[in-house]
Image 1 (cartoon, rainbow, N blue to C red):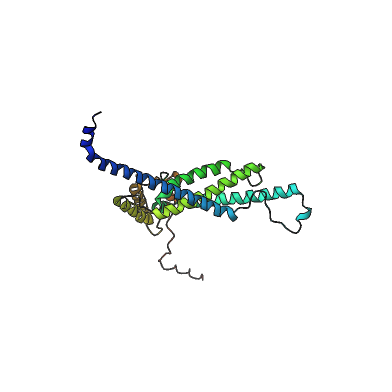
Image 2 (spheres, rainbow, N blue to C red):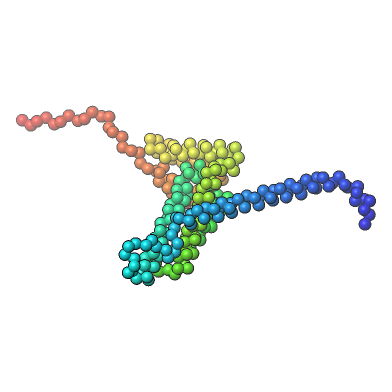
Length: 254
């Protein structure tokens, strides 16, 4: 190998080194973001588990507990825990549906419907797990291991939603271009007309069609969201009081 020829290209060291250094810095930033998200998830889980849901099998002591049957007490405790878990599960789902079914909220916080966002994708995965492990009712007979697994799934579901919602409210429309943000603003204004009871049916229908056109290619509306919006658009106009003078009472008969 002729090393003398290699030294003729010594100047390539600087651009190559800069490119490598940029790649390393980009990798470090991505790793740092992932590390921060992991820490935030762990911290939120720790805070939630510290007092939100009692441990499986735990029950607060009452004055009459001394003579209780241990098996019956454990069953009551498991039923109470399962009831609480189902309530939390339903509450998180209801909070998610507020975004999923409300087009105005989707326009304001588009990241909540964007599965490409890491935290939104993590929430959707946690939702699938919690839904799969959900018992059919609060009185369903499940093993302690199944109850523990469901409890952890509900905790992950709640934490993942909180993180996704917080991130969506922080981002808003930051991931869209200036032209796309203008279309979102136009859609939001037209939406207020489409559901305005004071507008005529023709005005509401025209505004609704314009909303769909502005959002086409920007946001993916679910079939349920479209159905809810169409019902609002199709609502009848409120009855208006008549301005005609009242009819004269009939003349008394002779």
